Image 1: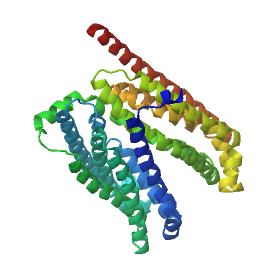
Image 2 (image 1 turned 45 degrees about the vertical axis):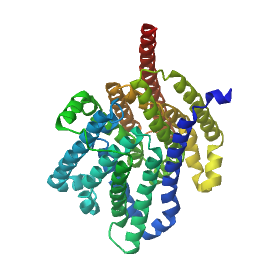
Image 3 (image 1 turned 60 degrees about the vertical axis):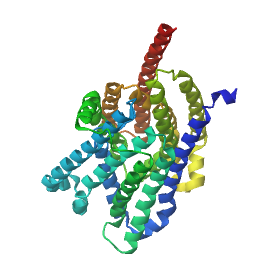
Image 4 (image 1 turned 90 degrees about the horizontal axis):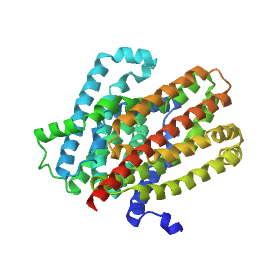
Length: 428
């Protein structure tokens, strides 16, 4: 019975490859943290956090979401033109961000109220460009089933960033931790281009006409998904921002640790699963083959994992946090207990959300992302509540919105399966 639930060996192998890469990549900065905390001050870590929020939020729209379309064409020639379109869009966006940064530099620093961020602001458009270009490289490798290269790249990015930060810190370079982070993205772009060549990529077939055609075919991505995707990215930072605004730094610390412990491991699995599922589902959809069986198997497996995480944290959260992190962190365990169901449910739904992209339901994704942004933003009006009541409101919003998301995924899947069934009947 259990054997029937397990997907085929290729899927498992690819998933484990990406999963291992993500785990190792996240372990590198954790293991290096004793050195980093001695080389850099809390203020410098704060600058890195602000730098990452800006670059990660805006890099989501760096390639106008065309990078997702690299997976969709049946012909490699069309995919190459989408890849070229992604690179071109990334460069144009980088120039726009750079120009706006120069023009509105003083105003942005004034609004941020961080004069110590003045010099670093000029670096943000460069890193946004690096991240955007790498995303295009990443999806080409996934299209070609180069999951091992993808995993190596992830490890290389965090290693380069961490090693660069340590070296710059030892040399006493100002803002070394932020510059090291930027160097990591530069290094992984160089490695990514070498791997692109090793994967057999040839420029033949890329033409202006081909790029224009792919722009027309996939225009829904920038029109309907770019802005909502950026809002969705910002949404992940909003709860912590609101807690910092209305509650003490101690409570913000508890919340940060609780989310880190709950969500980071879930992101490892969810990201690896969704990337492999994206490649597999796209391949089957191009051939008009059912993906229902694969969906059912993966859903049962992930549902069991999600249920296990929920039960463990809900029952023993405060004790576990107190035992692992020290008695002063017991309250973080209480926060984790409240958020456990939301985290488990998000993990389950997010693993399958990539199916909407594979099924070209871009408008559906965008509508949900806008709805989620507005819903999370409403937490501002609950900021004066007692913290546990605030967290229960946050939990309720997440559960309701991700339930809607899951219904949208199932609806799109059912429509596709109905089309497959009708085509099979016609062939028969």
